[in-house]
Length: 310
Ligand SMILES: [Zn+2]
Ligand SMILES: [Zn+2]
Image (cartoon, rainbow, N blue to C red; front, top):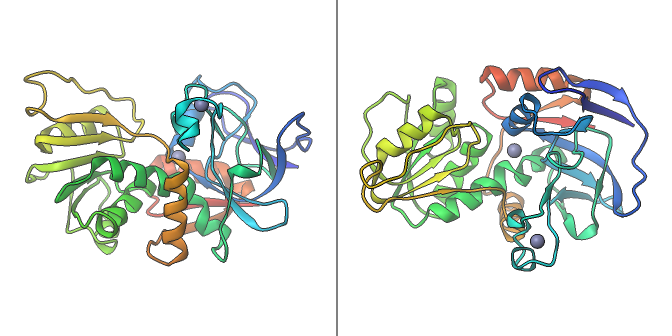
């Protein structure tokens, strides 16, 4: 099977032929589409991942009966309280597809079993793939940031674009979007944001701030626009940290990180997508263009989601 393989940190992926997986346990499934996420870039640049490794955690596969399915990509121990409540992303022993296990930038991958496959019905596989992370992770973050009458969304990439829609759709929350790219600010307004600013603009403090970037600069902004007793939800893995202390943040502000969605988050976002309630602007590329996709993401000019199709 063909796969885009990471052989060493920071080096381009190698598109190569490798044997189809033959695991002792688990289910081998054919990949139909897989999103390209900023996290893939972070992983490519880090020493965190063992190599050789296949990236890709927004995966749509052909299920055992051929039906297209979204992969719930957080694979827990299935014994702890988090796993039993359907929140395997929180399991101490979680294996995340494309992070700890080979992901979907290949013609096939191994999932633990059928319970991790969620049929997507009539949705197009490439359109559905981003729901696995961009859709569900942002949904979780919004759920955890609410209730609030107004939210500042920092970073209008794949996740931020979904977050704007969730805030309008399920939380009836007004949205201020912030990004360094003017094209993404236009996109934010199209998706329902009430206002959109470059990071240096003066902004009204808000009760909820969602940071999808996570750099020192974005966290500084998050801290400076949150209200007293507000909530800061950090989703972006940009490597920044934030001081927390009596005079470091507004009084009684909650600061939390937020990770990948639970099983019920995935079910909810799939349901909204199937009813046409959310849109995701997707640009489809072949697997051979995996490096091109990562390069474009690195440059920051991608206004939608890049998805590789197999
Ligand atoms: Zn991701
Ligand atoms: Zn567990």
